[in-house]
Amino acid sequence: MTLKGFLQVFGVIAVVMTLVPLIAADFWWIRIFDYLHIQLTLLTLTAIAAYFIRFDIKRAEDYIFMVVLLACFLFQVVKIYPYFPHGNYEVGEVAEENFSNKFSLYTANVLQENENPGLIIADIKKQNPDVLLFTETNTRWKDDLASIADTYPYKVEIPLDNTYGMLFYSRLKLKNPQIRYLVDDSIPSIHSVLELRSGKEIMFHAIHPTPPMPQHNPSSTDRDTEMMKIAFMARDSEIPVVVAGDFNDVAWSATTALFQNVAGLLNTRIGRGFYNTFDATSVIMRWSLDHVFVTEEFRVVDFNLGSDIDSDHYPLYIELNLEPDKAEEQRPIPATEDEIENARQQIEKFEEKSREDAKEKE
Image (tube, rainbow, N blue to C red; front, top):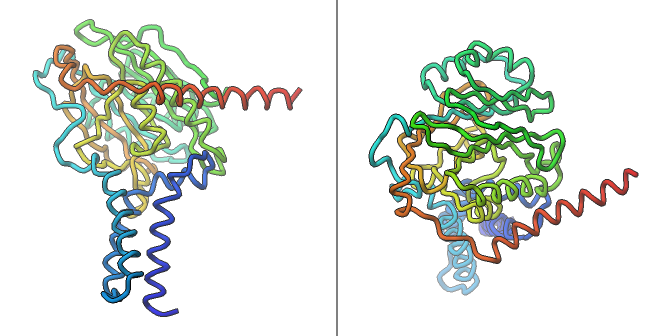
């Protein structure tokens, strides 16, 4: 193969990887390409730069090929640009910090097989958050974190050995905390009203849906359905809402965008930077799976990654200030009827599949 032929193959790979995520299918080998937009943008830029080496100004085919590569690159940049640290925040910075309306959240996927809890305990002591959310926690992790848990009077603990256990600790009063299994009787989510120090109440949803991976789930249907169900809960809430956890999805995917729009939520990451939480063990294959979405009543005081805790995720730390008087300044655009219908269809598709599976077991 000639050098030019090799470069053309390299470019075609970049084009194909750009187009695959546009396929409206929930197979894991399609949805996995949603994650790779940062890497794909760099790959396409490399392909463009490399192809210039053998670019022939007399060949129309070279112009066409370059235009296609540039179009792919532009599409990819547009996708991820909101997550550059450009300062155009979707959730604005705190205007009037009020201790009684402020709270901090530390959320971390600890990696169930991780046997070094000392690192996360040290990081928590450094951050001193008001609310803790841990995912991938089993009974051993519950015991390992007991010294920290003892300093938080309110707690919801669901230790599981299937990598979907959750531990939720709070210094803020929890009202009517609920554990729900929205799509699977082994995949919990936590829902509770939190009472801020001012006495004002907010709704908190903690989630950790399954990823579209063959060892977990061959399709994204379960994950997408859980996210849509949470979206409608947030949409129907009469008080400010926070949704946090390991979403097993990137912020720029069509699923997360639909979730955010239907729920009427804002992404605290937009304008601040990628803050990639996964994979902490890789330098190149990194993207953000852990998120904090909020309604327009909130402002961000601080947003950062935690320290290395020997997990494949970095923890996410955020301080939020409740400022309902300024909510109108960042109110999200309402979801369209088509978006709401798409979300409902996603749930109906899952429920129909569940009914079929139940009949087969009879």
